[in-house]
Length: 463
Image (cartoon, rainbow, N blue to C red):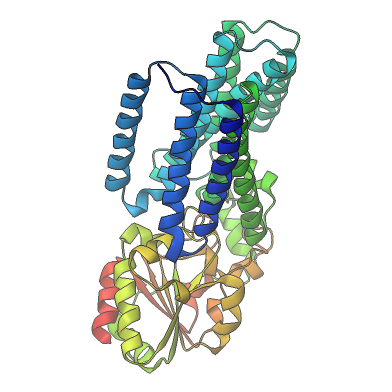
């Protein structure tokens, strides 16, 4: 005999679990409580799945239990094996799986004959559209981050026209679902076009805009889940999906403001420089690039020894080099010598929101030392030394001068105002935005090209 749950108990429990998820998200706002918040939200989701299965008496409980156990084991193994450098790809894949799950819910509801009202027909097709484009778009984003796809914008002939036509067809499919009978062919056509649409709009977005893209796709995964909940009249799924959709959209807006970009320009691939426009970018940057001469850590001995105040600027290159632990060691050594050390965090540094915060927290850096851009910028002019580790676009002064380039007008970390600058980057090439960085030939800069771990170890030896 199965467990019977009354509707009142189910809906009250659903409300409590939604509040629990929100409280868990609240706890994630601080590293001190983030682990607890993540665990609490995960447990609330587990209970939400369990109570839904019991309330609707879904299938065979032993089979469901085995499936949950297997999927949990797979998730734990992936979480343990995935390196911190792979976290952006992992986030993108998980976003995609959320969209894919919503797509399967809608397909199952239609094929099972549960979709009979006009409202449920419309929402089921809308779920297929949003869920399909989220799944494929997220997989493309993960592929770009992993280097499987070209990280620069890939723009095909007639890209915008085809994008517009696909948008119109998808809208017609959603509206046509109301009066028409939802056949298998209709469903397959909708899914196929939504998958194509996800690929088509993501492939033309450059690597520099992946943090915003991931945030947007995260919002889409929540929206897809919420609409799927409407299709099957499941309030718990509607509520949880709404929380994810709203939080992802808010984060997307925050990041667009931080980069001084419009969301449509990002989605249309207008914000990243292609090979053909690099020359124009260099010409408009008011600072003629000269040959960058790489120095050695010994050349930085005086600057690092005499500095009393230091700001470290981490970027994606630090993640690639897995140099966060050496950065922590450098920070500790300088503090032992009485130096004041802070970390300047740009909102879009790395490949996903909070990427640098996560890496530095993993290395044991005190959260109180991580200072956001608006708060730290006034301090650069009073700072003796800035150490840039793997960052480029987020400290590029050309953002203030190079009109017509993707980063023009983007708020940056004002590292150029410091007394001395040490740059630990692998190469002196432009960042993802394709704009030459005048810091490399600034008279105050000591450029250490090559492996960040080796150069940081060299700086430690100078101390």
